[in-house]
Amino acid sequence: MFYLTRMLGRPVVDAAGETIGAISDVAIATREVFPRVTSLAFLGPEKTPFMLSWRKFVEAIDDEQITLNVTRDALRFSYLQPDEILLHRDLLNQQIVDTQGMKVVRVNDLKLSESRNQLRLLGAEVGTRGILRGLHPSVERMAERVVKLFGIELSETIIAWNYMDLLDRDLSHVQLSVTHKRLHELHPADIADVLEQLSPAQRAKVFEHLDNTQAADTISELEDAFQADVIDDLGSQRASDILEIMDPDDAADVIGDLPYDKAEALLRLMGVDESSAIRGLLGYREKTAGGIMTPEVTTVTEEMTVQQVIEHLRGEAAENESIYYIYVTDADARLEGVISLRDLVVSEPGTLIADIVTKDVITADVEDDQEDVAETMSKYDLLAMPVVDETGKLLGIVTVDDALDVLEEESAEDLELATGHRGRGGINGIWRWVSRNGWLVVWALLALLAAAINPVLLLLLFAASVVLRIAEDVASHALSRVIESEDEEERTPLWRRITGDALAGSGLGLVVGLVASAIAWLETAEAGLIVPGFEAAGMLPRAEVAIVVGLIYALSILVVSLAGTLVANIAEGVAARGHRVSATAVTVSLMITGTLTFTGLVFLALTVLTALGQAG
Image 1 (cartoon, rainbow, N blue to C red):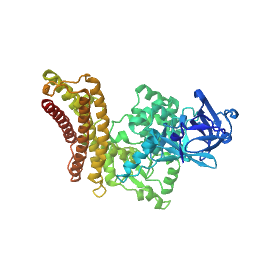
Image 2: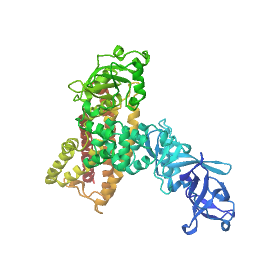
Image 3: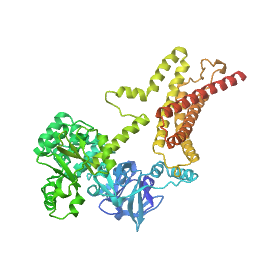
Image 4: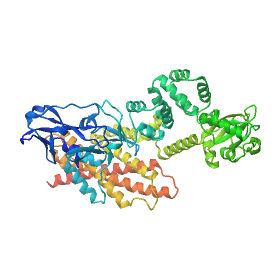
């Protein structure tokens, strides 16, 4: 097996044994299932670029070099064909979409295989191993040995090339690829999951490959925060065509989030019926039954027969969003009863609807809260629920998919309240920021007080803010563990959590400690430093100051990381017993731990240095 990152820079040797350059890239033919390498790119003397036909000029490849079958003077330059790409230039470190895992990933390396003097691309490495290999093979080997000590295998994460679909056929700047299935084969919900991880420009590129029906279904599956942005980025004519195809309730949700001028322009481009239905829904208040219902409802009268209703369903009612329930109304469109599709199918064709209708119908008022409607549908296992006005007139139905969206939305809001993480913006945006980051306000006030008392205290406060920031992140991580806590039998053992967090804390502490040491070194005078209040320690050498500062940061972060593990474990136990876990308590406890640890280590270090200075 060969890896592109290991191939780059290898010498290129001609038939006479002379080194004539170093590999800079290889090209593949994209139309093949397992693409063969078609061209070799290398830099010759004085960085002169060359590109050669692989089939014509490459004799052999091994771990050390590529050998050509002719001498230098017999080489002939080759050019890329329209269906060829360069792996290093066009794919390495570029984003692709893994549609199996529904996430955007980066190509960290490319795996190739040799067969009969041909080199073929197997797939893209998108895991950690590819990153380590790109740094240096020895880094990859060392990491593999370290994780093996903990019983973990550092495996490859390969996405096979034969499932990749390049979206950008210009190929000079490939930005996006889709793996495992082509776009038109994916479910709209899967496409939506992918789109939410992309930039606006990349989302626009994806929509170029969807027809209007696919685009409409995909937009319906997007989170609310993305729907209006996607429509706003499309041309007005295509946007109106897509909105016409969408279910009226979904289209109304999108248009309601658009600027007024844009919304009006799109509505005027639509058909009269579609535009009227959407305008009608926009008149209802948000978060009510009227706000989430669809006016597309199948209605019949009691005088009709089963056969007539079936023919009606095959005809004009076929386009309605839901036909699992057929609603019986009178001449004034007032709801009188309901029949299910099952009742219809098992009845004789000549049976009157009046003989099989169910008069006891669970309904919602147009002004009912959407959460109450969704909970009622869940309680009675309804696939749809009719919405009526004060006179009993049938206005529309709330379908089960909208009810599920409401329950998910309400659950997310409850979770935000439980963890203290609220969205930004709105009238209360400033207050929410202060309540979440109140420690910054307190810290600023303490800094002003410290500056008036002793400049050293001011420096300590600013330095400790780094530890506080990390403590807050550790608290968020601890809360996420509580939220995603596993069953008792499947829960990761505490010792393994401590081991993992100790490694992570040590790594982060080492990085922060090195940075802090470097800053301390640069900010300390050549001769050293005298700390006010600890003059007995004498002049502290510059190197000694840098080392002590680095150790204080590293140890503080390690302690906070381990404290986060213990706090998360305690909080999980509290949650398992049915008690509410306070996000504020978790955060404050870890911040206090970080503050006490940092200040304690500072004064311990200064005390020790003072004692050593006096002894000296």
